[in-house]
Length: 213
Image 1 (cartoon, rainbow, N blue to C red):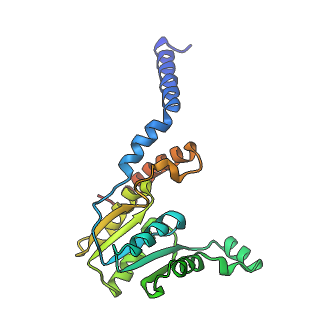
Image 2: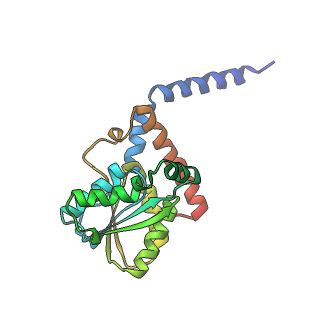
């Protein structure tokens, strides 16, 4: 038979879980604010938008480029899975690729295509940063604005600082569309809660895997 102390602890634990569940959104919102690392915006030589979320990262990076905050835009695209590639080839959708969308946006915005550099086949934030570093070694820049989703900003900056190390590059973090509340970027509040929680898990995982400081 279980002891009285066991049942007391169990009830207390269930009560705590119920409180956390009831207030999960305001808690996630507070935690998300920490994730949204942001630096004062300054004019830089280059702007970088990592792969995924064209409608946020890339769209805001294009806005900054048009406003004169940078001279060129570097982006990464996600590597297609074999299944996705086969689907697009089967239905003739290869022209609807991420790369074609990026170029179409530049054309619509009447921006010189030579100001756009596309680094292909990224599979993670770490690969995004490695691709950017390899590009920087061939085409150096001294200052960089990094545009990411707000909840992704802190982890991405940690990885970028690790990859660039002591390189003489001034890096500024700029969450996309910073005037909009974080929850506006998600279909519903539950998606936002899960995204924030997953970011904290990823920060821990990346810190262990890549020895992030």
